[in-house]
Amino acid sequence: MLRACLRRPGAPQRPMGAGYPIAKSPESFAATGQAMVLGQMQRRQFITLLVGAAAAPSLLWPLGVRAQQPARLPTVGYMGSATPATQGQWAAVFAQRLQELGWTEGRNIKIEVRWAEGRSERFAEIAAEFVALKVNVIVTSGGVVPTVKQATSTIPIVFAAALDPVASGYVASLARPGGNITGLSLQSTDTVGKRLGFLRELVPDLRRLAIMTNAGNPGNVLVMRQAQGEAHMLGIEVTTSEIRRAEDIALAFDALKDKAQALYVVSSPLTTANRVRINTLALGRRLPAIYDDREFVEVGGLISYGPDFTSIYRRAADYVDKILRGATPGDLPVEQPTKFDLVINLTAAKALGLTVPDKLLAIADEVIE
Image (spheres, rainbow, N blue to C red):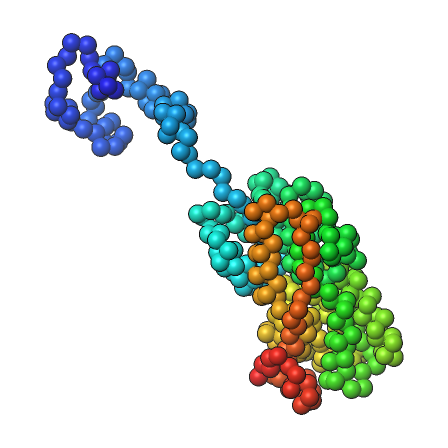
């Protein structure tokens, strides 16, 4: 039909390709100097028609074909608070668990991954981007929740690894979070006493302790206060070392000179992204340090005691699955960790001149040599 419309009136119909050289590209067509006349339609008009068809395909495609265009896939906005190097494995287990639950990237779900690299200014940028993309769920760590909460009150938010979501004001209660937020709690304030106990096993004469925390992170501040209280009850003098940027870390260690025998680092996106630097500075000043995240110990830190983050991020995928299938975030109870790991790095202990007691080695979940 289109061929008949484009033939000159009264001209004999030729077989396709007969009588006219076929220009294989615009350049080859121009080189021949020939102008193929398509009926009364000039070449420019023909190109205009094609461009218009590309810009507005719905004008040319039949209704049945238009109805078959693929629908928008459910989209998850995943914000890693640190870097792929430090938290990439958590994103991987999250995606793996989603696949186990029937969600395959590119087939029936889309996952938009962004990394804040431990910089708080990136939190708001990424949150705004997710809102603009109209994602169906936002997944992030607890310390980022206040920023994401400011960006949206309607898009469901699932937090993994919130230090104390109730005390931080993220949710109304663990059983009934309310609003558009739910997730998993680390309950780090409940485990502060154990960490101090492990540290005293390594440094029996501990009398002066430094606590390093991100002062801009509400959950970190809560853990710091809990640690201060626990330390005072043990007769330990506390020096707080507050940081807000990566540039503050070296200055904080300089200020600790001769003021501490050991260090308690409260994990946050900022400290995790700079964990190698913190380990190096602690070792250089011969400060035994304890962490609540094994990621520090795996790159040279001394000791950590905290939840299994791999399990936590797998469980975050379960929350996303329920929400995508119709559950309301505020009705999904916040879960607390059931498994905590004690990890000790013997190489770091040797470098610090410490002897790890046999009873501590006996209860350790992992010993790095």
